[in-house]
Amino acid sequence: MAPQPENTLPPTARYITTHSPHTGLSIFSRFHDPSVPKTTLPNGSSFTLDYTTSTTPVSYTADADIAAYNNHLTAHPPLLPAYATPNGTVIRHTETPPGGCTPMHRTLTLDYAAVLEGEVDLILDSGEVRRLKRGDTVIQRGTMHAWRNASQTEWVRMLCVLMPIEEGWEVNGEVMKMEFRAPPKNGAE
Image (cartoon, rainbow, N blue to C red):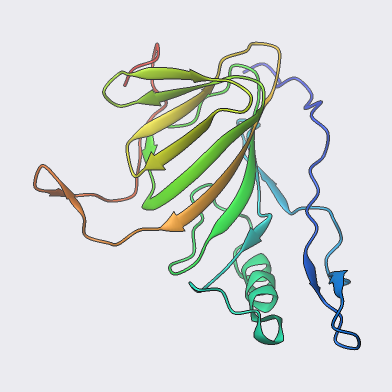
């Protein structure tokens, strides 16, 4: 396998706000630098863990949400691509190298995904494909899908928010489960 081209996308940063315990004024968290934890997979794709929550609604009391995020950072290295919290949310960036393709997969989450850089094909197991461009969004509702970078020279960056869904939902009498298959060939499964 040929080496992946160098990722020339600028680094991402995340800033967490909170309140000063002394003045009550809004401040940036002093406990989190702007760098975002990143996991790189063998195929060159990478995932960040920008923030997580563990409850809905989120509790800000005594920065409980920040404490939960810190626990996720230490409890789950390396970040799994399908990482989700059972009662909260996950926000992350994904980066895919030129020509890269994910496995066909289903996660048990509701995902909001927005293309920030590049163009990516969203491939469904029915064979349907949509080319997404910068600014396009997808509401991914637990369907089998794969992401393929449409370019052979440029990287793709997406921002994704994942939320849990109820377990045990069925399609045509089959209970849906998290599933990973081989990457699609020629745009279809």
